[in-house]
Length: 108
Image (cartoon, rainbow, N blue to C red; front, side):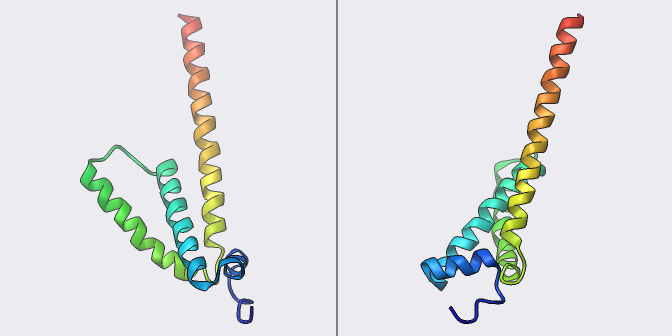
């Protein structure tokens, strides 16, 4: 398609597969989902229901800006890498805590 040379490669591929309108909705949903995953893996704390609603509404509103930026920048790809790095970090942290608990159990 003509005019797709300046958009993100992933978005360009989506546009060619499902059209412009569908690609924008899918891309926005991917941004929202990845923002939620990154937030939960890296920054989430125990909050009340009202505070969680405010945070998730803010994430959805902020993802509109990320959608606009994603036409020129690899936003989805960057969020995916951030989620992957934070996931590995959480997994290693959990394994490290389990090793420490097992070590303390044997020493007592």
